[in-house]
Length: 318
Length: 312
Image 1 (tube, helix red, strand yellow):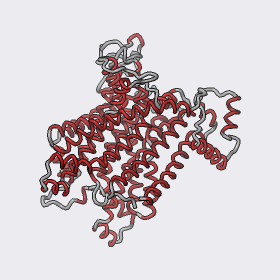
Image 2: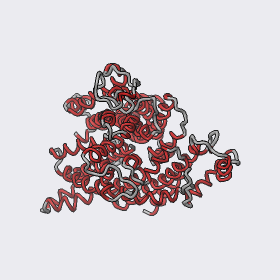
Image 3: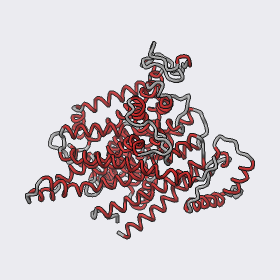
Image 4: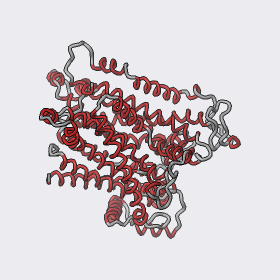
């Protein structure tokens, strides 16, 4: 699961390692002769990519599924009757019933909520930690940067799955809210480092710009410069990294729930569904295949969306 | 070079104490009843309680007591004494039996990644923007995006149960054929990353000046690619594969659990399932050390391979 981050990080490094190790932030590009902004260029680029539209559609679809699951199925996912065990499709249950006699499709639809909630909130908190740490480290430099960079190194050196196992084993409570909060907390605490590095390097680039010097000469304080002049530069690359991270957080949540240490029943999560479906796959494979497909498509959609946006904003690749 | 290694070693020592302290603090300390936490949801008899109190020096209190117990744990860890699981087996014995299986599995996965990933990556890098290149890019994106908990059970179902190409589970003493499917599943992620890395770096190096020089000397294309470009392009790939070996040793929890391979990851998987606290802590501690050491080796290797890199 941390593989995603390693991949993203190694690709970033491979693709972006400039002479001084700074990423090729959009803002470094000299103003083109045409009066079009970088965002405009990126948008023109994105518009022509089918992969962008496909992944955007999938993301919107899953979001709608998480917000209003009733739109997609009229069956109750908690309505499980054992006499319908592995029954073929009937009524609204287009994929039939699982081992417990629950509607496979309805459970997959209702599973979107927990996954998306965990993914989005972890990405949000990750982003906040990354922005604060990256901004402080990049802006102040010196010993502050040295200390924070070592902290990043150490946290980056902790294998995500192993640490999550240790942390989550401590949560004894079975309450749904507590477990969701715990998973979000664990993913945020362990997952912010890649984004923090990205923020740090774009802050370092932005800090040396003339307009920052100009702002300082006009008497702007550190707070104002960071908030008004540097933050906007650090935001775009961070959002791209976080979109990809959102996909991997969803995969991480499903993996932890699959192992039995993330979310637990009666919360409906794709990871739990996959684990249950796996046990009885010799009798019927649909309860395994349906949530697997939902999970894979969702994770893919976020990763492809982030990938497409990153490519569009990276002038080196154009 | 020497200074770099020393610095890197010092950093690792710091990371080692940092991570083990975190693992230890989370598992044992700062909670109401550490013995109950160790045992999970199982009942603890008075005799076990007395034994564990004695063993972990739980009668010492306060910060001093905490660090006393922490150093106890560290020195046991360094001496290779990992204690016993709740079922009474020595964790060292469990790991000794599990490592060979995990290493075999990891080697298969790495072989898959190298044979297919690097070859396809070089081809895609040379023919950039061709159909082959775009197809591999899309395919690797799919592989990277599909979580192992989806890939492993589905591969097991379709290839093992439905079409019966491979044995669906490995069993107690798996042979090469039984490990092949899990090895491919495990290696597919590394394959995709290795492919992308090779592709990017080959494409980058093909534009380098020394390639132009080699071409203008009149060297045949085959020699330019296989000697000049490949040698330089493989540096990041080798480092990645080095990190990946460490990851695979420690990280095949899902794959080994799904395919019933009695390796390290499987034992951890079972430890989590059966609420076996000491087993989980023992294995996680060892895996963290393996992970740190493999990262160190790779960093040093990186500096040896690429003379431009000097961490000063």
